[in-house]
Image (tube, rainbow, N blue to C red; front, side, top):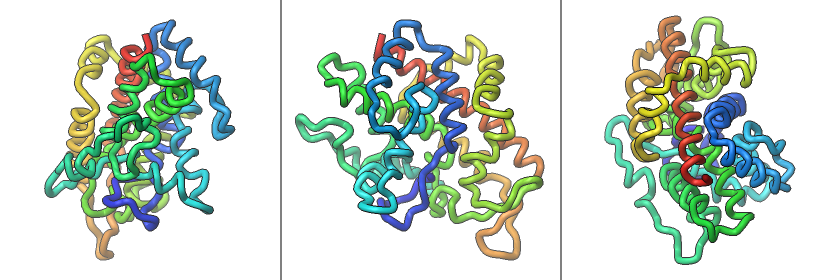
Length: 288
């Protein structure tokens, strides 16, 4: 779901890319993993006894959403504790990373990242979980959680509306209509509609995107930090997702032109590709 200001029960669900987008990212990453790292990743995931997903890398990339929503209709403990970790609320009219990350709260001494404060952002959580993956003293259960969250959160960070907000819950309050697409909110279209236009299924999409990724792009995209990637996604949202929306006579309702859809689909392809390359780089650096 989108960036959604403060943690609250009224916020819409945060399903960046939907399952298919996350699976595409994981499959791209898997292609670029060093053989030893790929084996370590699978060995760690084999320890998942949550029964929330299958244990391959593509399905495990959806685990964080499944876990967060597993008690959404009951106690909401998991939902409330991890909901805000999926996005960073950079406002179009004044991007403030410190504010969007609730002041970057430090983990109390001896606290594992999976037990960190609920009020935190995706940038901080990626950094914290990556540090745990690199640390040989991290115990096995926490190492598995760190991997599961990183598989998902790197993808979340590259969904433009998880890194930007127009006081509309990351596009959830903007209802849009586009040629050949049922009327949804803007966030939904970036989550799923522009992904499905890239291919028949996650495997086909991943293979097509991998074939178009050059060695120079891999080198360039592997640079930077999660904070850098957030600013990049914010810029994409500002220049593409929120740009060129045509208003209608109804408040908060917009028309998406065929040109907008074509541009958004191309941007989605690049964002998925960048996320896959960066996820692979992070895992190769952390688990070699």
